[in-house]
Image (cartoon, rainbow, N blue to C red; front, side):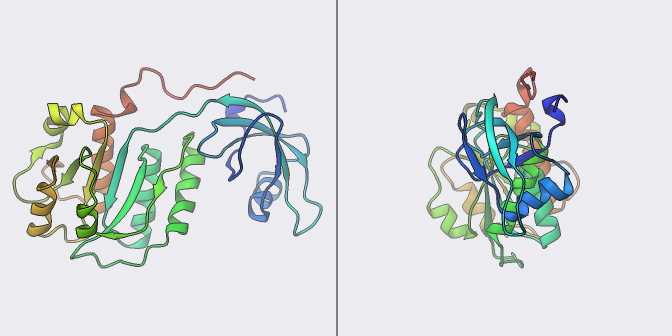
Amino acid sequence: MSTSPHTWVRLYVPHQLSDDVSFELDVKASHYLSQVMRLRLGDSLRIFNGSDGEWRATIAQEPKGKKSGVILHAENLLRPQQAEPDIWLCAAPIKRHYFDFAIMKATELGVSVIQPVLTERTQIRDISTEHSLAIAIEAAEQSERLSLPEIRKPMTLDALIKTWPEKRLALICAEHGEAQPVVQALSGGLAQARPSAAIFTGPEGGYTTEEIERLRALPESLALRLGPRILRADTAALAALSCWQAHCGDWQRRNGVTRDRD
């Protein structure tokens, strides 16, 4: 295939990647490559596993039956592994469609950990980490991301506060009470000095006053106001992540994604 690498199919693979390694894909991924994308023997694609960078691979063998998979051969490294900024999203689960959307877009925005948090007003409590990871993988494939966010099992807010890392800044999206405008808060000395941070967004109906007080009692925390309008929970999460990336994260890099030439 003589086309430019950036036009190739990009696929997450749960296999160790290195020079001259071959492996068989599962049936689902094989069907996607051979039946949906119509790749054939010798065609090139880009693969990544979240830890070994992005590699050029070729189809070394097509499926021989319904239960066999495509065999890929990793050929050369296209991009070395690069860590995402150390920003967590601690979000109360909301209706599945909206929570899936938040996971997808948070992955695109470079979040490193997604922690579902069960609060007093949380109505949705049955969260599938496997389903959430599948959403994140698809978003990582499409957004040129080299890593996957860690999808954690749901925790109660009390349990999370009890185990909170001392040096991680808690950024609380607050609908009421005292809070700084988001630009002012993120431009201040505390936010600028803390590369490890977490954004907290509440459920439909928001945090209770007592929950906000407990969050603000963490060793380092800032309450943020996201403008004059009340934002839906998924909107608030993405707005806060975008602001953090612009002021404290990797949006300040001069260059975006770089691709090696074929």
